[in-house]
Image 1 (cartoon, rainbow, N blue to C red):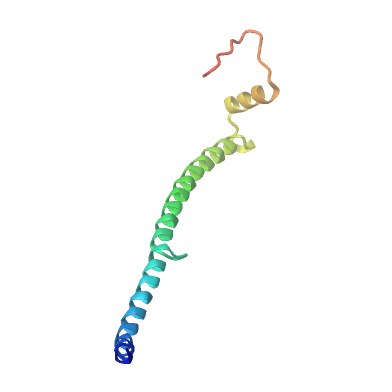
Image 2 (cartoon, rainbow, N blue to C red):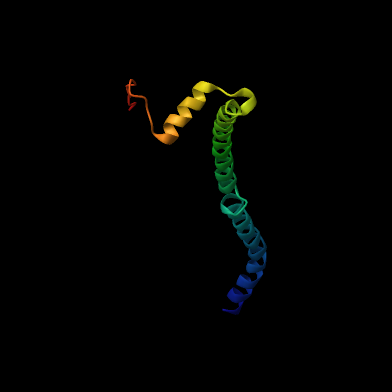
Length: 104
């Protein structure tokens, strides 16, 4: 019986090192994939950045359109058609001889 225990002690010394190494590899491997800075998080952040860039491009386009419309309302470059359109929208008024068409 003592020889069996002695044999287990001798073999366990050779098993503990590789077992701890394997456990360390599993631990670090898990965190490389699932951790706060892992591959899955990196992919998700990349997708969020891509969607934010698309939204930014749309907002920049909208900004340019609004900036152009605002520049046409400045006194030095006043567009009378745009001014007439804005007055009608804001005041909700039309002339008696006009017909209103609604867009769907």
